[in-house]
Length: 322
Image (cartoon, rainbow, N blue to C red; front, side, top):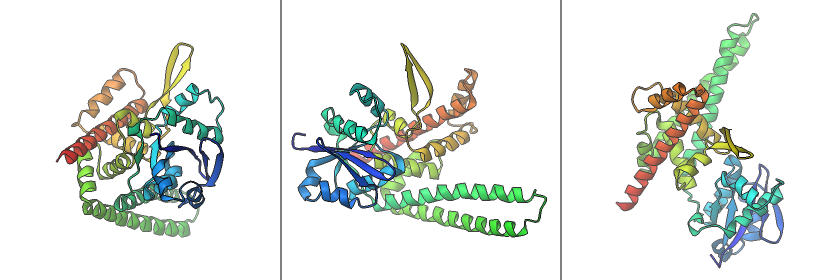
């Protein structure tokens, strides 16, 4: 720890703001991060002794994570739940990119050795992640095209040309979806670790192949340690507001992976219709206690995530001890 130096990196859509303990720097958030590399990681020894402290921000932090993984740079990925509390403790009342970079840098004073780790880079995993993102995007487009086609059947004007065009796009989208599904299955089957991990997560009632695959990617890339962390990184943790001595839980934070939340929500809807698995009983007990339906479904989605994470960690521990 004594030989390490730290960089606080605040990640925005277009920029990275870095604080090295003395000065604030700003670089373009782009693939390769060439200027960032030239400044801080020009020599091999820089990659060994420098640690990047950052808060995962979904797609915006992808370039930084990819850069750190391919260059074997150690990172500290701060749980989004910790950041507001850290800001409060250190007295950072204002919120700007510069102050956030300094705030993240300050975390090195209390960081533990187990929090410092390398991000894994696995080509099959990256390809799978990309295909899954495209699949979800095209599924959304398919639904919109299908709904618009139904709308065209009801309009009182001639819509033959529009129908023809939409129908063609819909067919092409569905063909691409089928192709992506096949490619994902081939990638999963090709990698023994991915295949076994996905199958283990898939044992949870309400979790199909698609959700299991996304969960596996999420757990493995983030190297999540416990259930509190996984719930927070998915944005399914409660947002607590304090008023005097009262603590009010108003809603989920949504400060995490929105795609995973969406998939888990759909999985929860499926699971509560299923008689087996116990999630239906849990959902009904929440409704009986007066919880709104949406709140009950979100609670079920959180349960699904915890069950999936438990299965993943159990499989991981068994694989390591084998």
